[in-house]
Length: 129
Image (cartoon, rainbow, N blue to C red):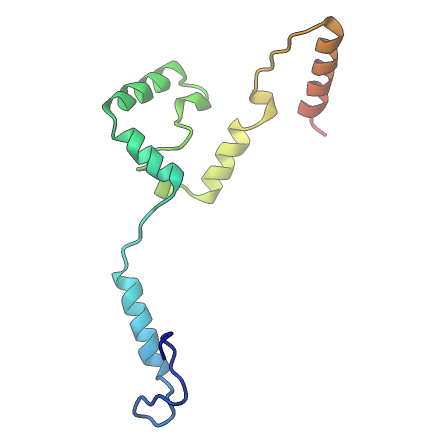
């Protein structure tokens, strides 16, 4: 058929238009084995572009030297050479370590009552339940 399916009216020599499952599996395995997997995505593409910029190298080295002990030493999008090797467990561990309200800095400005109200709200939000 035009859509690539085999209908009852098409014969493959066996008389019923049915394909041998082994042949189909062999064809699929061959396609998968020959396929070259490609990593894509907006962030991945942007990071590849950023990492190809010589000035970006200076920025990354500066970041690492200025912030050796916190998450600012890392690129927010990740190193494209490392992105494909990242496991879910590593991602979750990084998130739990760095993306927590207690790692933040809070700046509040305003009248004294506004500041106390804001700090009270922040304390409730950041305190363990």
